[in-house]
Length: 341
Length: 242
Image 1: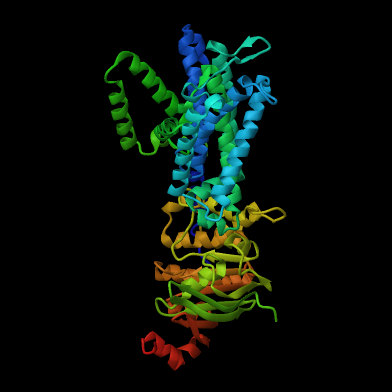
Image 2 (image 1 turned 90 degrees about the vertical axis):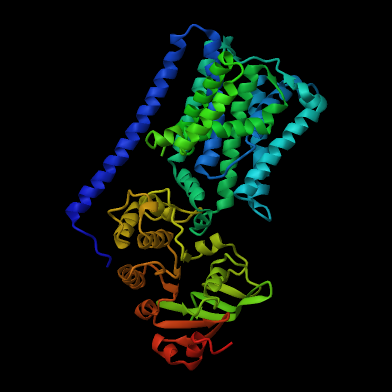
């Protein structure tokens, strides 16, 4: 049979590999701890409520970025239109809570729940069509379909009249609060967004490390081989698509509730491509990378746009190109395989 | 006697060119069947038809007496077919262990997954115990081929289809692969193997039964010695028959 070498050498080599795995895992935990500690101390380090509030917004965007990372970084399915679900979350909550007629308006908590159900149902129907249709789509064809979806929804939002509020969008009447506890601004919103991000991150990490996560990573590697191992690939892709769409919808509903307004650009192509930059910068397929990428890029943008009025976009562009060229696998990809797996 | 795999009049054409023409054969338990022929004879297309990648134009395919002609590939796999490609399709970004786990997991309700113990035994069988934490992309071509075989075997197939397994391998690696095939059959890990191969030494080493294809048809069958004496086979390899 296929001969193996000295058992003593074998044991030593396997032990070395264990050590490498262990050090990678430690590096990931160290990054998580550092990031967590900084973000936990931030509200105590600053009394500027606007500054704290802004970080809350970054957290919600980071949830959106995690959903894209699960789809693109782990599942290997590039989506150019994920804001369709992020923005839809905002639009649906707005419609359910501000429009009158039939069973509307409904209380905010019910609107949030119903929004997630509608987003899930819409994602499911679309995924069935795209992944299980007569001509299942993959690769660039899938990316183009998602791009078309975002474009279509943006156009509909602009032309939607009383339902979507047209160009002006919809103003929210509700605020984020529980038992008179203000979660809408400042530290309250920071806490709400932070806890939401933590939960989504932990759930996503647990998914990535699960059997389903392993198969998802397998799909990224070779869809054909996964199918030839007996897996029902379309079913798995439908499940993943619904999951990431619901996460994006959840993030979108919180984000636009906080902003107080949702407008057509929320579901559009610009928002969809922006999130790809956050994921690429932080490191796709790492989970923690999209959080780092989102906070870094958005904070840099906010800081520079306030000080370098004429040149900030140029600087951000050059920085992005430089970082992507120097670290093609993103900040976390470079910093030591900081992936959740 | 019930055949494990049976092809009846399988025909496949591409834009007027008949790649597989009315091919029929039966695969029995305990056989390693070699499928040989010159380039363009239709061997790989026939394998693609058998595992479901290429839908056939005419004929039918049976797996354990179940008509699988209209079934997609993943269902044929569940019914006991395992396919290993000429160009390996292991998961390059995953470790050896993770690759094997993907083969071992249950693929549908009520399926019995392979245990950790079986994964460990497979690592030994394919000789990759040392590299279990290595990323698959870092393995040699031969090692990747063994890894793919191991991954497919953990899905518990009855029939293994191998498309030019020794392509790109060193002589030593090809010899190990031949040993592996014989051991798999002897140990009962699989019930039958079909090997498409140009390497006649390899075929001689593993197969008792050989099918020769030429221009989409099976023109001869028998032991390697019998087919080498067959004038029709000689003429086909020398390009004397059209």
